[in-house]
Every structure is written in structure tokens, then in C-alpha cells.
Length: 459
Ligand code: ARG
Image (cartoon, rainbow, N blue to C red; front, top):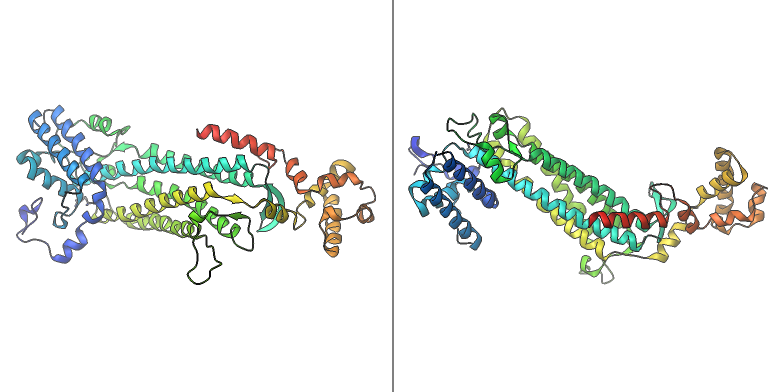
């Protein structure tokens, strides 16, 4: 049997395999709320412009409300032979209200319909993600406040570099996630334009009011070019690229948690809620949640690549290829959202192991820069000379297998006779961290202040 929606010129129905490759209802049914909202806005506008009678509009709205509750209660039967969410809903509307259902599609096409639905969906996702990243930032900032003075090693090249504070490390991620939110907010601003009314590709001869549907659907304005309106998927691509950058941050953090929770580092303990055991090795405690966050991030990069590949060869305007925009985007946003939730849970329960962190911070001559700075400040040495003297002192300490602060004054004076015992004040990891009071530095007092500022800002 030919398709009921567009089968006028067809004498037979599609091949089984055609139906399989063509249908999108399996995945686009999740656009049902947006599709119904778009249809209601369109119907109301058609009524206001006298294109449909008030009575028809009333029936359409009543029918759409019923469809909505049938979908909500799980009573709705999605049918693959009706291809997609748009035709499934329209057909059901017809079953419920009869003839007026056929008037809903006046001055509209599935091309502007799907563009509208997907924009509304992505806009909801952007709002949801913004809230989720905000919760993660809050959890991080709370830890920063709590552990503002917990000393840990700061790394470059994953080699101990200088002492930092655990709170400072937490706040580094708060900054990254703030940029991520601003990128997503920027994408939201640009994407919030209405494609509805572009119809198939050329606009329509009906006297529609696109400002009215824009207002109704919360769009800032109608899109200005009908060809662009139906063929644009920049809003998905921008969301996926902003999400990719953010996902990369999430993955770096997950990687740190994997390293930090290992028995080699033991920097932090993850709670039981976010760890798993091994079925064979009873001693194991694995950071599976962190590993899965790290791995799931790949799907987001994958979706961005997949959609750029779909779009790059398409002539204007709509091509069916564009139906392939949804599955990767859904999967990417689901994964990203899940990863954010898991990371927030892990961060909330995270316990730094203070003694181990402090011990690790003293390894690797992490206060060597403080010694060099002291030579500059107190003895007036040029920094390059101070660097050289400090290097020699590190070599002495290394030979004796002790830390810089464990060298005797005589040891020091053998290398630089003007050194006094005052130098020992700057050689502890606490003194080192406390001295880093420059803007953006790791001093506990800076960190406490920044954490407070963030917590106030995050509300
Ligand atoms: N299911 C389609 C999609 O997701 C809807 C648009 C169909 N338009 C068409 N001309 N066949 O892209």
C-alpha cells in the first residue's frame, strides 16, 4: 500500500529494506514534545491569520493535547511505516479529530518542522547542560574551600614541580567549566532563531506570521532565509563542538582521578559509591566511574566528526542525509550529561589524603624555586646565578639523599657562603605555597578567597 501521507503518485508501498533505511521513528520519537509544541504554535498562527478557522484550530489543539497524554502514558503506538515522529503524530491526530488534522500542514513542510523540533530539543539540552556543569562547579568550589590549605605537589611533565594546594587544583577546573558554560551559552544565543515558515525550502504563499510562531516558541526572531533555515545544522555542530571542548576537560579530570586514586599515588580516596571491586582480585578497588567518564567522552568527539561528515557534501537545501544528524547528537549529549553527573558525584565524595599529598609535595626538591627566589631577594643575586647555585645545592641534597630543607647550613655555605639560616623559612612546602600570593597564585589565602567568590557567584 502506498504511503498515506504522500502516496498520491505512488502505486506501491516501499520495499521492506527501504522502510528500514528510511524510517527515523526509532530515534526521533524523542522529539515528540517539541513536535507537538511546534504544531500548536503553527496552528494558532494559522488561526490568527485567518488561514484556518477558529473551530479547526480548537480541534487541532485538543487532538494534539490528547496525543501528548497518550505518549506520556505510554499508550501511543509508534509505527515504522509512518516513517518519523511528524507523520506518526499527524496520523494519530487524524484518527482523533478527523478532517481538520489534514489542514495543520498548510504552509509548512517536514523540512522546516524537523529543523524547528531539533532546534527546540537542542535548546533544552543546552539549558540542561548549563545547569549540570554549574552543579559540578559548585561541588569543585566547595572542595576548594574545604581543602584550601591542603598541600599537594604541582606537576609539570607529571614531574613534581612546585607545591600547590588541593583547593587550587579544584579551582583550575572551575575556571575551565566556566569557559565551557560561556561557549554553550554563546551557541544558545546564536541558535535561538526560528526556521518554521521556511516550508519545504522556498517559503510559502500563505500569509503566515513568522514573528508570531517565534514568540510562541521562545525564539528571538525568524531565520531570514528559507533555504538556510531548512538546510542549517550549525546549531547542532556548535553545541557538539562546545561540548567536545568541555568533554575534554572532563576527561582530563577523570584521568587525574584514575592516577590519583591508584595505589602508586594514593592522593585521593574515591567513595565506595563510585568504585567497583574485582571478581578475582579481592584487594582491588577500581575507579570505574572515572574510567568510563574518560571513555564516554570519545562519543562526543565522534558525533561532531560524524555530523560534519554528513553535512560537508550537501547541496542546498534539505537532503535526507540530514536525518542522520540525530542519533549521534542524542548519544553524545546523553553521554556527556551522564559523564557530568558521574563526575559531580565523584567530586562530592572525594577525600584528599593529606599526609600522602604533603609527603609527595616534598619529594623532588619542589621548593628549589623558593630557594632561588630567596637568593635573589635577600642576597641580591641575579636570578640566573641564583638558579645555578640552587642547582648545585640540589645536586648536594640528591647525593645525600635528603630534601633541601634537610641540608645543614654548613652544606649550604660550602656552595654559597652568604646564605644564612633564614633560608630555612622558605624551604618548607607550606611556606612555599603560602608565599604564592600573586593574583591567580596557589597561596591558601588566595584559594580560600577565590573559592568563596565562586561559591557566591554559583549561588
Ligand atoms: N525524518 C526527517 C528528518 O529527520 C524529516 C524530514 C523529512 N523531509 C523530507 N523531505 N523527506 O530529517
